[in-house]
Image (tube, rainbow, N blue to C red; front, side):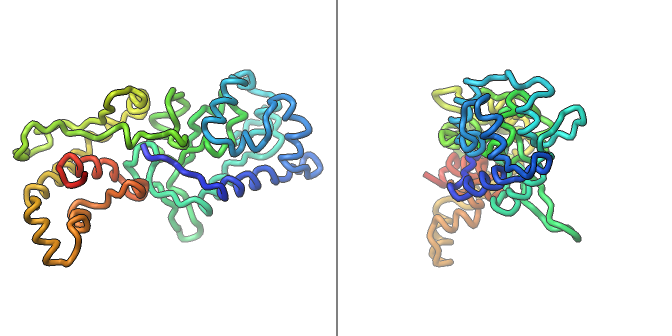
Length: 301
């Protein structure tokens, strides 16, 4: 739902983290040197393509290599080990999931689930340590495509519900939030289909709330697979609150408040209806919902 953006500096730091990891079982060879010596000839891609290639590059790699390394025990799975501790798998390196999670915690500020924008998934302090509320979902299943198990652009910071209870290993045939072409916010809008122009709406049963994509169906499977419409049904209360505020604060009242407070009308609207700046949607839960309904209520062009 919200696009994930990884900067060039983040990509380089991530590459160094994995590529320079030493393999104690193999004379402290680095991951990079082991890959170049034993694996590169099998996959025919540079390690940097696999670890830090953008999502479109990952799709290219997936199409070319396919699932031929998805069997339980092979050298690709043994090296690109994200979280397996299965004794039957002769691992080349211990699981890297804790190391990768720590990298995200230290280098990437995560606020809300990029899949659904419903819950906060920020890091938090406990008495003894810093912990994560986020999980890292593999958009392309790491079981089917083990060579993409450590790929940065295959990792989507997400909530437990999206990752473990709904999506699981499901393959969604659409764009990942990590794709540069992911334009869900532009194409898909929350709509209430309110019939009354005078906002004669008193309960949640008086309107519908759906994600609607106009003129295309690019994200239809994404919406269905993550059960977004059903999950957002619970949050109709938020829309009802906004409708009630809009009744109380028509345009004339907003202008009065702007004059009294010496603020712009835009600032008054944000004070009343919440943050809905497009470049900061990832910072607050339900921010896309708020922004879209604010537009429907005529408060934002």
